Amino acid sequence: MWHALDGPQRRFALGDDRARRYLEDVGPFCAVPDEPEEDNFVALRDLVGPGNVALLLRGEVTAPEDWELLDAFDVVQMIGPRTPASRSVDPRVSALGSDDVEEMMSLTARTRPGPFARRTLELGTYLGIRVDGRLAAMAGQRAQTEEYVEVSAVCTDEEFLGRGLASALINAQVELVLAEGKVPMLHAAASNVRALVLYEHLGFQHRRTVDGVIMRAPLDVAS
Image (cartoon, rainbow, N blue to C red; front, side):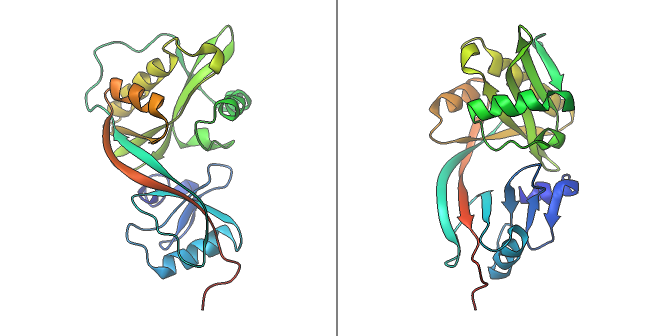
């Protein structure tokens, strides 16, 4: 997230070289440099506001003593294939845009693939599949660095599970990312075994486990 907010997605960032976060209506993720010091967390507190919450997703997070740890979870980071699949893109896949936001918000609220805000779709290309005119599944792009593009918000309405919709969308996203000369990657909760099995089947490989942390900023800066 830091390398996205300090790089290609800086236009969506608030903060400075000490701490950054996405605009609130784009996403809740915050970031600090790879080797943060006390000053970085002071800047993060000022950025989110005293008593407010920061969501970090990074290699390792140790919450400062004056921050309240609200939740911590393991996230598997996976790297996608570096060559396109031999099969063609599923003809059911179509691009999603601003006119589809309400349906996208509804779908993510029901399926809970991770944080999704009204302007999240501006971070990259979002694709969907409709069944009888209804948005049944989608997959998009979230964090983007100079080398990687994160495939995100992969979700399927419960009514349409088992039809290969997620696989078709992920394959289409991989094609798009590779066409840009970048490498697809993604994050999934370590507890989401079903998703991990699917991603491995589609050619994604486990890279490492990273920390997901939700913590509340102190009301006052520690002396």
